[in-house]
Amino acid sequence: MSEDAILLDAQEITKRYGSVEALRGASFQARAGEVTALIGDNGAGKSTLVKCLSGAEQPDGGQILLDGKPANLDSPTTARRLGIETVYQDLAVAPDLDPAANLFLGREIHRPGILGKLGMLDKPEMRRQAVTEFQRLGVTLQSSDVPIGALSGGQRQSVAVARSVVWASKVVFMDEPTAALGVVQRERVLEVIRRVRDEGIAVVLISHNMPEVLSVADRVEVLRLGSKVATFRAAETKLEDLVGAMTGALTQEEVA
Image 1 (cartoon, one colour):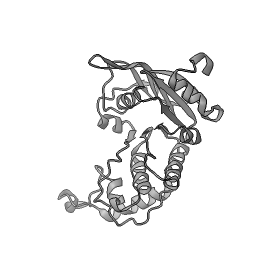
Image 2 (tube, rainbow, N blue to C red):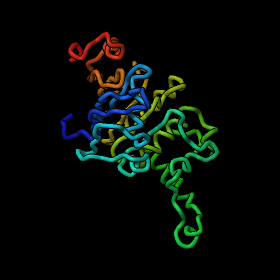
Image 3 (cartoon, rainbow, N blue to C red):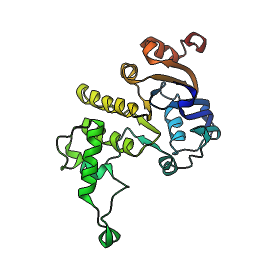
Image 4 (cartoon, rainbow, N blue to C red):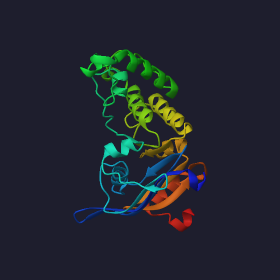
């Protein structure tokens, strides 16, 4: 990919929590039409960096560029407005609502005219659009009319991923999207991720599953002790290279 394809560019990000230095000049790039995996051992700073890049936390130093321009991601709402969405590990779905209602959660379509002004939702239109989006992303559901809590874990996760993807125009962060899923369910979620990438969205995958990272990612960026220590091309990388970079057994010079 060319440098022009960089959508999100974090430069020398620092973040402290009291005396704890969570990020020590961490840098990170996400490119259009790529899956970039962000990996590192526990305490490496992955979660803190993602929070800073999705507006949930404010960095103490460094610069964040979006489309080559400085971006002040002062809240998740601001990040969403700029085209950045996040799929969290705990799904954050409403289990009592159906898949269509979850897809439009917080962005509901109201009925036209006076009924809409009175707060009535246009459920048929939301359901119609939801079916179209699920088909586009290859999300197959047992039923579109039951509460999402009645669906399998893989289907719930697919809906959560689809919700972020539908509203994201630039970047989607996915925090352990296949955690606690079976083999078949995991592959379905990974296929949705591939479809998202192919639509030109920058996908950032945070995962501890190294074989999964190598199977779906285009690039892998490694954090260690709050700093980026390596970048790999997934197709040219072995599992032991990732582990070596994460643990410090492999130096940046050796990676290069």
